[in-house]
Image (cartoon, rainbow, N blue to C red; front, side):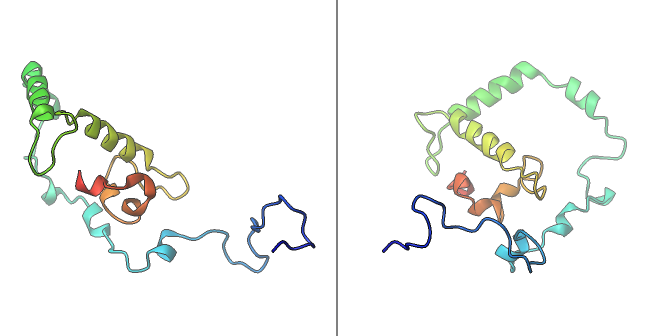
Length: 137
C-alpha cells in the first residue's frame, strides 16, 4: 500500500545521521563485537624474524636462478591437486582472483584490507560478498 503523503519514486531511506547521533557510521567493532584481536601478530619483534642477523636480501635474490623459478611456478600452476582441482588444469585464474581481491579489499575509510597482511581470511573481510569462497583457496 502506497503512502499518499510522500511522492512516488523517491528513496524512502533517510541518508543523513540523526541529529542526536554521536557518530555517523558504524565501526567494524560494532558489526563484529566478538572479533579476535590479532594485534599481537603485528608486533614484529627482532626475535620473531626468520632471517639471520646480517641477512642480505639483495644478495640472496641475486643468487636465484630466475629461469628455474619461472619454471617452478609454471609447474606449480599446472599441477592440479585432487583436494582442490585447478580450473581447466591451471591455477593461474585462481591466483589472479586472489591477488585482485587481496588488493581490492583495501578500504580508505578505516585502513582495513589490502594485500599486505593476508587479512582476507579473517573478519570482517572474509564475510564481504566479493570474497566468497576465497577461504578455500
